[in-house]
Length: 305
Length: 305
Image 1 (cartoon, each protein chain N blue to C red):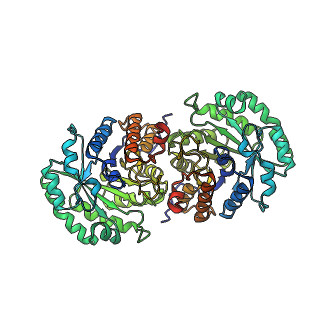
Image 2 (image 1 turned 90 degrees about the vertical axis):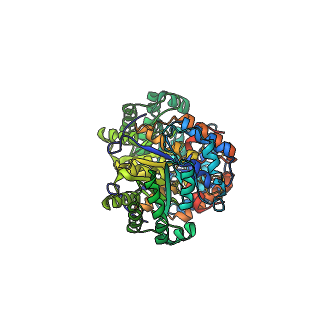
Image 3 (image 1 turned 120 degrees about the horizontal axis):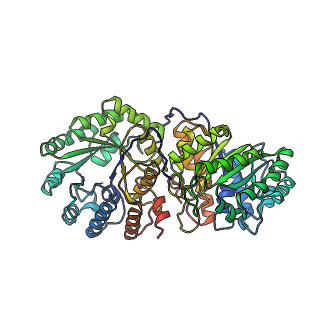
């Protein structure tokens, strides 16, 4: 039954991260032709914005070592955004050489994760991003900035909201168009999410430039999304089938599943353009390729293996 | 990090349904001494209100055929409520004979489910409950009424809100103290939940007498709970470890997992008295007895097998 909830936005843009954030965190390395079919099926299910891959060095993320081949294998997007993650200037070179028109950079709100993920301090990582964003903008590219560990960090614990806002502001000041707030370890709850968004708005980063990126590790992703929508956010990251679980347990969960998000938005009368049955069938097909069941509740219910 | 969200209640009562609603829907029949240990461990983890079993005829629910033996095996509750489901007068006789002081009856918002679950029309089922509630009240028992299929019905589809309110009002008019709104098939979304609660309040059933009972079949349970809290509800049903999945798939989900709820409430600074680590360990132990992994995200994260 479709029943709107007062105070929510009329439209929501789903930013699909399954092919990149999802597959990057799956144990299995997926053949490039399967990835290409995955992206094509996601687009066919109505997902307009799809982050397809990453130009990170294959040594660090072997799962996405086929970035060039994948882009070559994809049918034209017809103007739909297909962002690619770019870690540094070398990555930007590859993006430009392959005709990419939207990129994303990946920052950290904490020193420990910056060191572990980027091998740099937060300051050094922002210095590294500066010429990437400057050149990308000069070339006319759209740039998204991720800021990760916004609700907590496995090594540092709680992450103060003002620390997140500080990193976010520095990333946006480089010239990025959109900021995605990432609860990378999924510990956040709705009050924290609301406070985080309000603090960004107060710092001049309006909800029209914000996205939220939740992981469902503690089952909080959809409740946090509801809180974010109520705070005015209209772009939500999600991963088809909930791809991206750390593979320590068969049912371990990763990103918010796109299907679970679409179920809620459909019920709220918020149009997304997504055909839920087609999407769930795509995730079920992908789960078969990965050899593990989808952790998405909706996929389990609509498309049992 | 603990960050309250304005507009939410200060305290929430968790009504634990794992031993009854959970185990009733598990394929495995659990030995009575395991059930007794389960209830004792739940109480030890800080859950105060625990629905322990059902006096339904063993022919219909063989999983709970040991109700008398379980009650006899339980340590005294020290005044903490231990409601038992009572389907009819025969069930009430058994409850009274066993010293039960809180009971629950189980109604349906739809004719089809009333027929399939109670073998009666809605009218006939309310007529059946009338003497049960009257006698129970005369004996000084506390009575909860469940109304099921409040957000949708597998046979009838959408269930009009006014139809739910009508059944709810008739159940409460019998003399029940609390009404639990059950989204038995888990299809509801936050706008519908909000409208449902507001309609009950408008009909004179205030939030002080309402509880919500969500199933996580489509991943909506916690987002719906957040909406219910915002609408003023302060009693939330949940099942330790998310017990109660229909066993069609190994990871199929049942009731909202108590752990996932407690994680959110802890983050919101809403005290529940529950020791989350103890509770997750209990659910992990129970998952071992049932031979299937807990579908709770928090259990998977805090107490991996």
